[in-house]
Length: 137
Image (cartoon, rainbow, N blue to C red; front, side):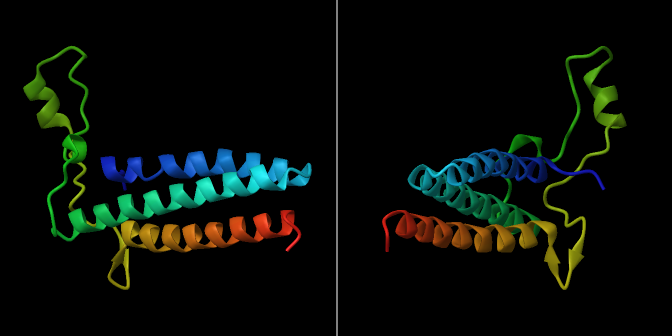
């Protein structure tokens, strides 16, 4: 099951969250709670952005709107040798508007939207709790 362009774009925020989250963890362990809380809040914002991207992908999958991303139906490289027509004919297109897998009628992008939203709320609550604890409340 090859990922489409939107599926790949949905992976990048998680890479940023891992780096920022680990930095926040190290800061918190060293007693720098306020900067850690700020980084946790930044991860919350990234999770909310991820929710929007995944929800957009769900809309594309269920044909509520067309994708604005050009690479959603092709994945070939035109810089190499050979004709463009040969590359187009030999490339299996991975479509963003086709549900590759679903469970209970919810696609992977749908589950990503649900989980990212829940993690965003959790990160907001965590940043508030860390800030309150750092301020002695």
